Image 1 (cartoon, rainbow, N blue to C red):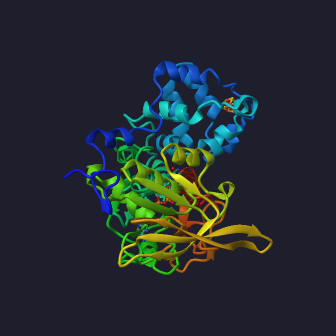
Image 2: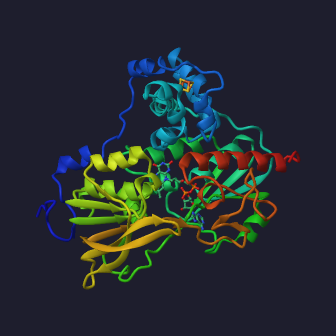
Image 3: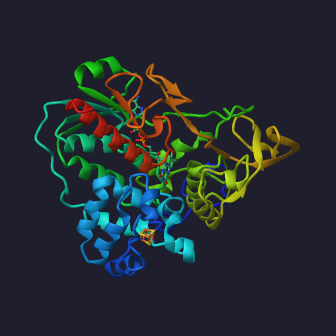
Amino acid sequence: MTNSQSTPGIVPNRLSGDAYGDNFSDLHPPLNDHEALVAADRCYFCHDAPCMEACPTTIDIPLFIRQIATGTPEAAAKTILNQNILGGMCARVCPTETLCEEVCVRETAEGKPVVIGELQRYATDKAMGAHPFTRAASTGKSVAVVGAGPAGLSAAHRLAMHGHDVVIYDARPKAGGLNEFGIASYKSTNDFAAREVEWLLSIGGITVKLGQALGNGLTLDKLSADHDAVFLGMGLAGVNALGVEGDDKDGVLDAVDFISDLRQASDLSTLPVGRHVVVIGGGMTAVDAAVQAKLLGAEDVALVYRRGRDRMGASKFEQDLAASKGVRIITHASPKAVHGNGAVREVEFAYTADGADGLAETGEVFRLPADQVFKAIGQTLGDGQGLELEGRKISISMTGRTSRAGVWAGGDCASGGDDLTVTAVAEGRDAAEDIHATLMGEG
Ligand SMILES: Cc1cc2nc3c(=O)[nH]c(=O)nc-3n(C[C@H](O)[C@H](O)[C@H](O)COP(=O)(O)OP(=O)(O)OC[C@H]3O[C@@H](n4cnc5c(N)ncnc54)[C@H](O)[C@@H]3O)c2cc1C
Ligand code: SF4
């Protein structure tokens, strides 16, 4: 039986067959050759380019755009990949509107930046065949990398390029980290995450061991004994709890798990989704869960955030995307209780206001109908492995050194940074350079 958007409860198959393909198609279809030349032509090739400064991996943006403009996209790809080996994924997922494109001089002058992200995708897509880099002669050194997400993959690639033997250990059955299990489907279509991992590994010298979790049979002592150095890029495995009455009712789920199931589904019509969906949170995860619930056919989706829109972690572009897909964004409201008999039926919220002593409830409450609630109020580090922490993350130096000699860390699990794919790539790369210098006696 086919369900509809108004079928009560949490059910699959709310849409007609074609709608799933249309809803989850590429958010930004790739530029063709002509479009890329026209877009590249808008660049002023600035000296001391602000776009380059704003890129966490410091890609030479004017250079790669000039290489596209002169008809050498493969050279452009190498310029990008030299700084950011996951330049293909970053071209798809970077919030460019708050990074390079925000500071582009054509944005400042005309409100219309050079489309740097789309040009980066154009160039890197051309390089997805033969691997553009080769390994240095073997150093005989071995490095353990924990986590096959952007930080771990970036570190592993750079270390392999320098001639070290790398073993990546990952708890999951598939490599890629949140590129594979977290990024919204419409940002990374056609199994791009898996194809990019395969391409990255084709440099050689990297062994990937899946289903191997640090803290579950694998210890830091053992890794340190078996390898010359260890890099930890294990992301944030824990999820914050709502901490309100009734938050354990059926239908209350972690947004990250919902997104992960969606990313791994071979047939989206089989995924059950609620008629009335409430998402709690204000970051990228909240927006991605809300938008994808709507695209799966939920009748109404409300995203509820406790502060104002200007404080949301999701960029204005992401907020507008959510609104354009029919997600209702409610701000200044904080969850008070989840109601229902076994399964969730309603969520109660209190209105909030910013006061002298921080955020406070105004005393007014309201309820939203819900048969599915997604919690997206932040992720936390799992096991800190006894390393010194800063805040709730592993404390690291500028080059990723932790409090334990021979152990580096980077990406979401490490202090500093801003929980973006591109930052994880930069931190993995920089830690790898420091590990290399240390192992070769130069650090
Ligand atoms: C839903 C969602 C959407 C996002 N969307 C965007 C976006 O659009 N743009 C953007 O820039 N950023 C986005 N981000 C953030 C981005 O995905 C992360 O910043 C980035 O993936 C961090 O990379 P990482 O390598 O540090 O960690 P992860 O990608 O989390 O990878 C960590 C890896 O370590 C493994 N692991 C964990 N614990 C262990 C253990 N004990 N032993 C062995 N292996 C372990 C995991 O299985 C995983 O493969 C999003 C995040 C989420 C949750
Ligand atoms: S700031 Fe804009 S115009 Fe200047 S180099 Fe960067 S992309 Fe080109």
